[in-house]
Structure formats: C-alpha cells, structure tokens
Image 1 (cartoon, rainbow over the protein chains, first blue to last red):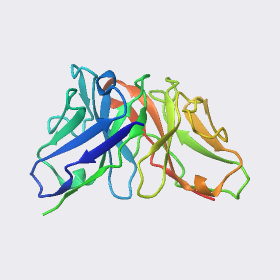
Image 2: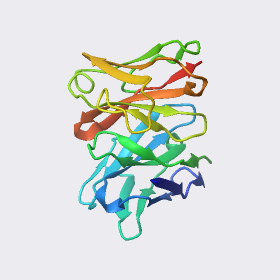
Image 3: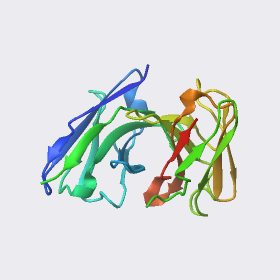
Amino acid sequence: QVQLVESGGGLVKPGGSLRLSCAASGYIFSDYYMSWIRQAPGKGLEWISYISDTAGIEQYADSVKGRFTISRDNAKNSLYLQMNSLTVEDTAVYYCGRVSVGRREFDYWGQGTLVTVSS
Amino acid sequence: QSALTQPPSASGSPGQPVTISCTGTSSDIGVYNYVSWYQQHPGKAPKLMIYEVTKRPSGVPDRFSGSKSGNTASLTVSGLQAEDEADYYCSSYAGGNNFVVFGGGTKLTV
C-alpha cells in the first residue's frame, strides 16, 4: 500500500534552516508529481510547493518562494524540502502528499512532521 | 485567511444527512471542476474523500457525495455515522501560481 513518511522536523530559531524528507513506498515514485502542504497549529491547510515526476518543474506558493526549495531523488524514492530564512509564521505540521494522476488533488498524505520556529 | 470559505462547524445526528458548503470565486471553484474534499481526524493525516467535484476514491463510502453550483461546492454526508466526526477541508485547483487553494475547514460533530 502507498506509504509516505516525513522526517526532519524540529525546533529551529528564526532565520534558521531545516531540511525535511519524505520517504515513499508502495508505488512507482517516479511516476507521480509530489507536493508539500502545511498546517499551522489550529489552522487550515496551505499548499506550499510541488515538483514534477522528473523534477523538471517546480512551483511554490508566494509565502515560501525564494526561501524554500523542493527536490526529489527518484532513485531513493524520496522527496525533500529545504527551508531557509525561517520565521515564526512557518511553524506548522508539514505533510508530503502525492499528487494524483489528474494533478489537481492529493490522493495520499504522510502523517506529517512538526516544524517549530521559535527563539 | 483561507482562500475558500467554509462554515467553522456543522453537526447532525446519527443516520441524518449533513451538508458542508465551500465558497470560492470565479478564479477557482467557479471556473474549474476540480473541487476536492479531505477528511482529517485529530492528529491524523488528511484523507481524500471526493475529487473532481463528485468522484469518490476507492474505499470511500457512498454516503459521501459532492456537488457544485457556481462558485460554491458542497459535501453531503448522508446517514451520518460516529466515525464521520472529523474536520473536513475543501480545496480547488486554482491554476497559475496558486495551484491548489484550501478552505479553512469545518468541524463535523455527530
């Protein structure tokens, strides 16, 4: 079955950096676009980035553009999110999600990893 | 502030129907038939329940249904069950730089 497992979250100071990982299994990873979605404490969901199956296309929400970088390693079935210049507003649970074949929704999600930005 | 507007809460008795609305604009729900609904139990990952307005992924009970009219989409749960108590989020493809936008979520109490 499809499984997505995030890791790399933790406590970081404002202005710091963190790299999240998402390990995928149960399907052909290289066949699907992948995405990161976050959820601030007590808040709703926010899409922040996606990457195409071959990593040739990346897109970012305005809230993270220029600070976050999405990448993938199809040989390792892994998705990454490099987060730089973090602010307290970036505090959230970060989910990796598989973009569906139709490329308009997320058909599988990981359990999430918590990122806390605080001094 | 979320791009799509949902009521913060909804409730119903077991066996009764309930409908959750999701209002967008002519740039998202109004122009694309790519509305999705996600169910999220506390501390759990969201689960896709409806996609492309009306379609259900394999394994989702048929008591969940979706619809759309103009800039507003709706999720209906007919025959509420205790396990349906959760947060529900709508989303819509928005194209361009926004890709997908979400609603703020509705807490459904059974």
